[in-house]
Length: 51
Image (tube, rainbow, N blue to C red; front, side, top):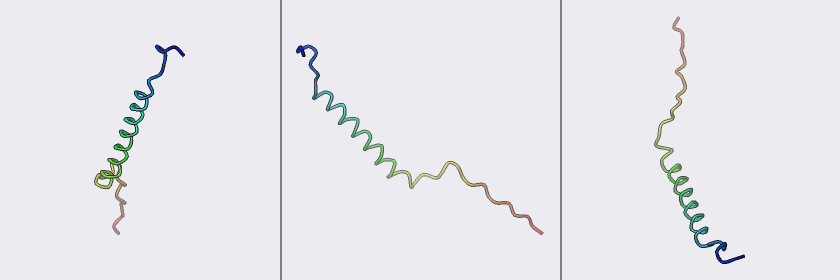
């Protein structure tokens, strides 16, 4: 392979490491903040008829 077409492995590796860190941060934020947030869809209250 000619030198001008050689791949820059360190740049490619850095991109994948950055992507992995971003994915790990998103997963960590999901598991940290998900218990604190109320659900968007709430069950409707059941209607009972009074006699």
